[in-house]
Image (cartoon, rainbow, N blue to C red; front, top):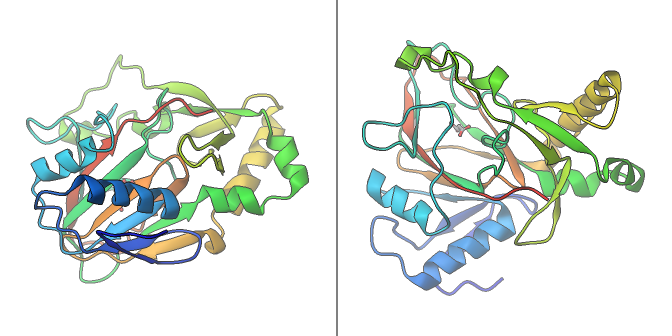
Length: 275
Ligand code: SIN
């Protein structure tokens, strides 16, 4: 693909690209937005370095790709409900995204994308790994693809979010977290490519088969989609940005840097019902 206004360097042939030549704290031209979108469609997750964006600029960037999503469980910083605080330090008991997932896949219309900007990073560690669910689907046998065709899975927020933000003062007694059914294989609305869409954080069962068969099948699909062949790994620096497409990517955050601090903001862009 020819880019006129940005430079795009693939991290691996299957997933990930570094984008340079754009300063997200300055006005971004329509052509640059369009090329950033093209790069995201081609590489599924894109990375930027040295971006001195304010939170408002990060939100504006997200709004160019769709409406901003409000997290069903995590409160944002004061006045910014669309912002997810990503923070870990010596007092943390857990961090966001410690298991493979596609963000908030329990929603009826799970987010299209997420943009994470880190302000403080540990001296080493704290990488995020991304896996291409196109590559995982493509690598399945034709027999398995035929078997998966038409299957649906239930995704639930209950086991993920219940009590999760009590330390931030959230009392979720009586709150109902989303539970929704999505196809096991979804077709990306822009690229038309097929992607596996089950993950060990939110998916609780495959609906059309017995419990035993669902557990065995999900275990296989999780192991298969976590193969290093389908992954790239991002080493953060202060002011780096990662922008991923939740419709075709899963990610996992490495918490190998305790008790160091890692901190930033994620904004999330609304998506549509998977088909
Ligand atoms: C997440 O959005 O799941 C967290 C990602 C990260 O902290 O690297």
